[in-house]
Image 1: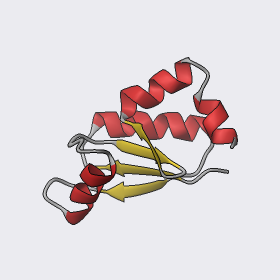
Image 2: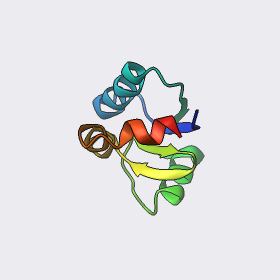
Image 3: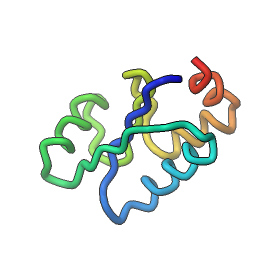
Length: 85
């Protein structure tokens, strides 16, 4: 099972949507609270190549993107392949 990390913040509907998709897939993930101005938010920004929004999602260390990117991978049938690795 791959390692999934998702940087989130409170009151974020996109974060909730991404987590719900992962929950439906039945895969465990590590949620990292990256509220604005925090060191973890800066970490997410650095790891994602400068993206400032949340969520930022990583599978086995590879940057997947945000909620829309995760959903697009799922629609294309590519998310299950990443999760099966």
